[in-house]
Length: 226
Length: 50
Image 1 (cartoon, each protein chain N blue to C red):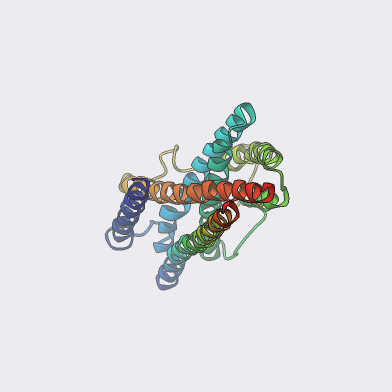
Image 2 (cartoon, rainbow over the protein chains, first blue to last red):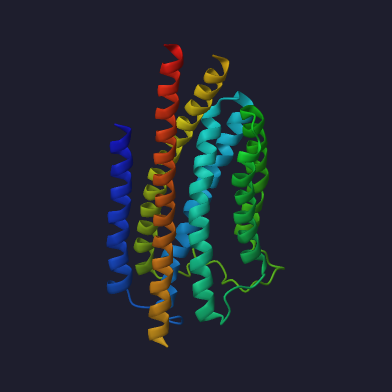
């Protein structure tokens, strides 16, 4: 049953993405000022929003773990963060490729880019820290605290281009200011839905692995006890 | 200029898919490893119980 859900979500996400890529590459005209490279928007932005959605899931589950000490929440948090990291990396790489054409540079240390890179590094630290703590409760507690602490960076990423007294290389916000052409909204939203479906399937696979890993740990303890 | 734009757009989408498929590959390998470890521990457990 669970396998069917995973395959359905993954296949639906991949099909939507394929159909959306056909629209982006074949149907839609290039952006007025940027040309074809402006279409990087359709993968760059949904990847970031997908990543933030799963970081949010991880934060909620981390808080739930601290209150309940139920390891199910720790498993969901680590699975969500690992998948969110993948989409943060997609966001960083596609942004860098876009920047190379539009700005003539691969990277700049402005507030938006730096805070997004920090977000990636903080959660990378989370994933690297976990195997270093052997005791399960201590590992889950430390991980939950770090997941909540690292999430403090996300409002900074979002606000970096909205603060009046900060000048950034990154373009000004377009989603809520009417800067997006009406014909660009459907592929943008479909792109987000497709990535969310793919990410949900990946989180479910990762979650099952986390459950099996816990079973392995308990079997090892039993074996030592015999 | 538009040819370079198109090329870099292609690179961007390719990179996105490579990253996602790379992660899927990591998940598959990790899954195989832990399934193998689980089977090994279960058979060890059965042996010890005998």
